[in-house]
Amino acid sequence: MEFRGPTSRSLPTRAPSAGRRSRARLGPLARPLGARSSAAIATGRDLSASEAPRVRRGPSRSAWIACAAGGLLAALLLVQLRTESIDLRYRLARSLQSEQRLLEEQRRLIVELRQLRHPVRLTQLGGTLGLARPQQVIELPARNATP
View 1 (cartoon, one colour):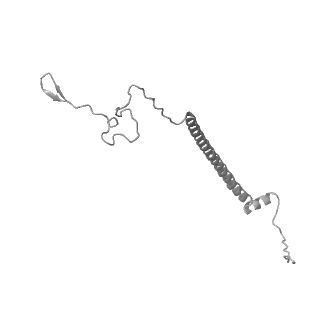
View 2 (view 1 turned 180 degrees about the horizontal axis):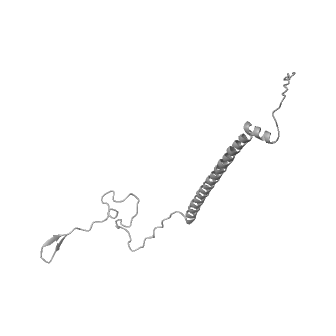
View 3 (view 1 turned 90 degrees about the vertical axis):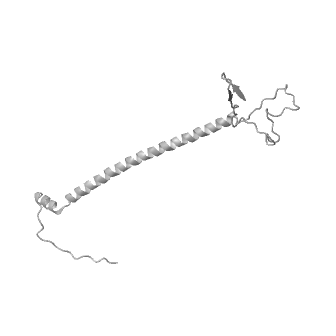
C-alpha cells in the first residue's frame, strides 16, 4: 500500500498488524477438527439465522459460597490459634516472674535461717536470757538395737 503525500512523493505505509491472539491461522491447522467458530468458512451455511449464544457454565454460586465460607472458617481458626498462642505466652511469662520472685524469697529466708542458727548468735542470746554453759555433762552409752 502506498500513500501519496502533498509533495507527490509516495510514502510506504504498513498494514496494521493484528495482535497475537487475533491472528487467524491458515492451512490445514487453521481450526481443530469438530470445532465450531464464528470465523469459519460460511460455505453452505445460512448466515441470516442467528446463532444461539454460547452459555459458559462456570462453578455455581453455591460452590463459590461454600469456598468462601470454608476460607473464612480457616481464617477464623488461624486467628483463634494465634490468639491462644499469644495468651499462653503471656501466662508463661507471668509464671516465670512468679517463680523468680519465689526463688528470691527462698534465698532470703535461707540466709535468715542460717543467721538465726549461727552459734555465735545463739551464745549471745543464751547469755541475755540467763542461760550458762553446762557445768557437768553426762554421756550415756548408746543403746544397741536388738533385732
